[in-house]
Length: 370
DNA sequence: AACAAGGGTTTAG
DNA sequence: TCATCTAAACCCTTGTT
Picture (cartoon, rainbow, N blue to C red):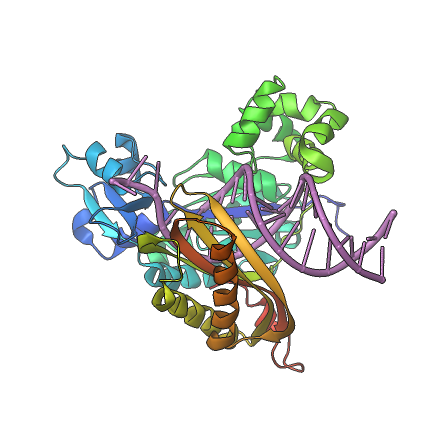
């Protein structure tokens, strides 16, 4: 008999400035330099954006998502600054080893991205937060000793609190927020700190005079429903109150997409080579996972950076590059027929998966990442 | 009323 | 030319059952 009733103990792990830290692993000489990991678009020498950077670069003002040219300007006085192209495969290989380590600490785990995971430690800790903290330290030490990487760990009664706890002690931190401390922890924070609240939602909330998470937690639910709808309204209020029932469990991916930036903007189907390559990648991904898709979509990002989508539900599921490409081409053709749109980036998306082999077991489906 | 399909928006890392 | 890439969740509209 356990004494913790319905309450859980959830641990969140977040690798610090992951891509930049991975680069520092294989380049001893850049340990103490500003390191900026870039997504080069190939349009011109330095076109593209910053994916992530280490804290040395952050201290100069470099941030994820800013143009590479801007980051170079910021660091122009710093001879030591290093700009590297993103190398996803390399980071994936390191990520896989770390996720394997994490899985040894709990059977209830969930990988949320290449550098983040949750563990449900309820069975292991049995309500003992000091014990959960010990497990957290063990995890940090093991990742440091085996992979030479630092991470931040947060522990709380649910995923939301565990994640926000981890965020609050980055980098290389560990902290616990007990159920009694949830409201004191959240209430004074600016609403923008709450997971799920970005710039747009922050703006709307500020107009309602909701500045802090505590304000949101106390706000009239119907007023929030009127502003944000039947799902998002109550969801925001619950999150602000620190309530999150979402279980720690492996998710299945419901879509794959690939997108590229074109060398030149176009208003015709002049990107067959690029389109072919995208469809091949996607088909490959479906095939290795034993999946077919019943829906194919295209993404077109215009010269003014507005995103347009077109999609089609098929009569029968498909998986070959040829079939995906034919469908995508048809969608692009009718897209261009609708009117003049200068396209900068193009993408292909597949969804509505069905298993290729009926009797194959579900592990193919649950093998969710990469 | 409930559901499917299609398109757009917002968020996150 | 400053402006990437992948995935999820939600919102709204339209049309069908």
